[in-house]
Image (cartoon, rainbow, N blue to C red; front, top):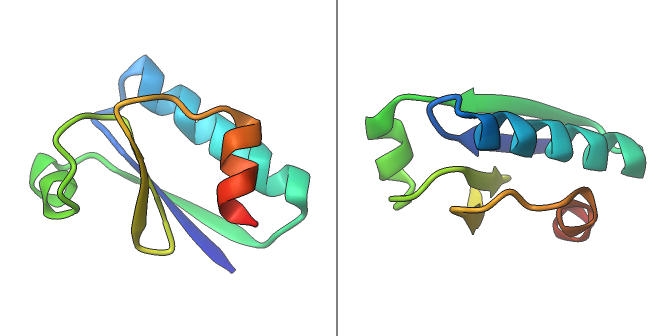
Length: 77
């Protein structure tokens, strides 16, 4: 099971990243859970200063941009 966390306050880019992450995981047919982290203190605890942030299994994989479905698939493999 993969744990995917989206770091951000809920802006359109954060929502798009969450949609892309879900589409990528479903496209690969893997078990996953998505958590949206919106508290600024929690976001900073990951060392992320720009949102949106993408965290997979506790490791920051992207900061400050909306990764495409294909980019996220590559990170999930």
